[in-house]
Length: 344
Image (tube, rainbow, N blue to C red; front, side):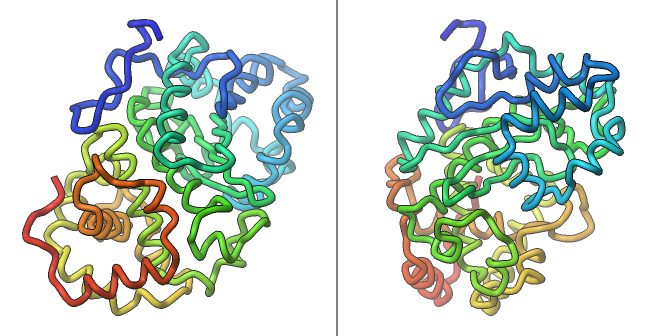
């Protein structure tokens, strides 16, 4: 790896990468699918043939993944993409994306990050990570296709600047490794050898929110998100507030409300409806008048209390915990207040 590309830093460091260029690059890399390069280099310049290029060069070669994305996450099909193409992919935004993620960027860093995640989590079928354009959903997501976990990272959300997408989250590109490792931990939690109830419900099928609704209690989602936040915090050394995706104000509110949040959660942790799921794990993180996604913070604290020292944690073992193990941890903690120490 060249000095210009930078190096991964250890846990506890002040920044995720030092001196790196965030572009993914063109070379073939294990687990890294930089399909956004096809979009920028072949689709956008095609003029009148743009839609044909979109179908033949971007969509069809990646149809299994992109069709799953449309059905499971975005809800936006091909007909709507064609009709609203300029709205979804403004030319100025795509030009800025090219600048923020150049082809000569630090692809080797992503490869190293993939390998470090895999070393710690030991996913039986190491997930493919798709760097894509798809701003009409979350910044990053994990899905299952025929039981195999895969990751999508929607780069327009990591594209701040004067031509940022109006729907984008404007996340600093240097924070992208946080969400890379976060989603990798999710893959480990739902792959075929995990002990999670989520995997038990979906088995070898595609990701299906309707199938999960009413079958997976909140405690499972709390552990899933808690492990992912803790793992990204450990692996990248980024500040916890960034690993949570919170503003400083949201973070302070969660800290101040920790005991009451835990008490309320333990009263609801056996419920499995998505209305409660959204209350604990959904919502717009840019809002400051209400607590948004407090389950992420609470999940981290539960994992922290359970594990203690992340440096000596067995991450492979953590993600294999069975539903009864997760329930036992939470029920034990429900009888005690958290220690007075707070996450730093």
